[in-house]
Length: 190
Picture 1: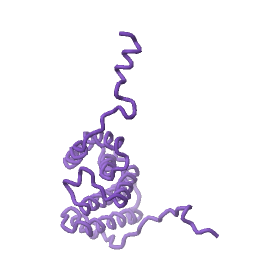
Picture 2: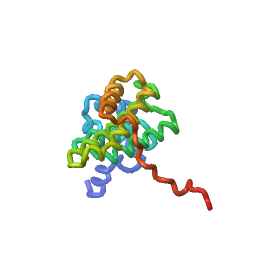
Picture 3: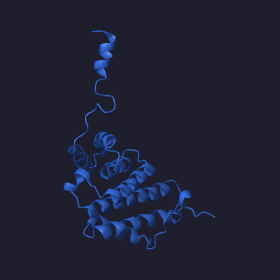
Picture 4: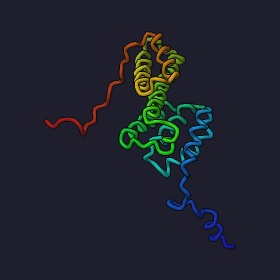
């Protein structure tokens, strides 16, 4: 067999459009792996799913979870993916294959829970690096805000109830949201 034929055979199916699209069960399997905190195993499944369906709210949610719960968490990437999942969910209301497992309100509550964890981890990292606890109040306030949003969506969640109780005990009853960046395109013309 010639070298060209060997290369063509080796790369068959790798060109865009030639790959098999991951089936819907791959995302459900990734979700279940994540429930068992096996995010490293879930990551390749989520990646393949997102490559085939880049506008998937559940895909971006799970991708954000992979970055949040990975061995070396990338909190800003996780936060961005989780916020994008929220935008996509509000736009499409499509839970994809996770719709068989969750109601929309439960799914959105899970996104809020994971966003709260991002802020809690940021606070923990800051304190671990010697930042005075009073300077991380904003992070904990943001975490509490996301927990309360999640509880409003899924009042029966014991995890969110416990998180709210813990954060409230820390005395962070009034969340201080991060300053929003203005969208230059939305600025009024003078």
